[in-house]
Length: 247
Ligand code: BTN
Image 1: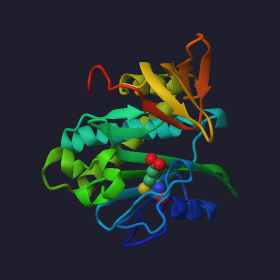
Image 2: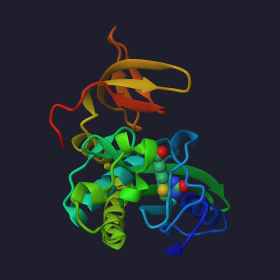
Image 3: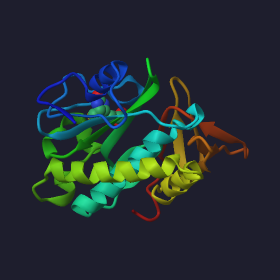
Image 4: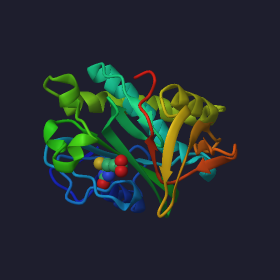
């Protein structure tokens, strides 16, 4: 585990490490990020000691077309870890946002790179631990573990559970039938998997439909009004109404 007081981004550092030969399982953590990265080229607000900023290098023995399942596996691991560490039951919004009370508590960014010893994946996990992680315009759409639990939060407890959960879920994903199992588990832990009315926003386009589970590679299947199914592999998904049962 590499720990930093301050770094540009734990994902960038993990990618630098992977390029110079870091083995699978190398973890990078920081107390603060100066250039935290989110999905779709967004920034990830990363004030000092307010969030959990973590990345792991993986070198999966999986066909590349199944690598999009890595962030789904990571989302399940975060869900396990939050339950084990703080008894918090969360929802997963496609592809891998962790929500509590319909507000974002954690984001995951998976990136792939070429290295001398083959392709590698870096999976970065950002969890809002303290209230200070959620400021300004983030307030309406995001929450923190501290806000959800009203108790002192210790990131090390989350880390210990997260490492156990990733070890287990990553192993399962690579076993025979692991992809199907991971997809089933993701669907069982997400109120977005089936029958949810959503808007999907791509670069300059958006459409509305009803979710119909995940494809074999983790794409979200969305049924349009005329009955056609679109497989969504990028973009943002927003629910058009709250979940019928809150998880
Ligand atoms: C998102 O929801 O857009 C993904 C956010 C991912 C943030 C984490 S924080 C640790 C790691 N390092 C980064 O620069 N990003 C990820």
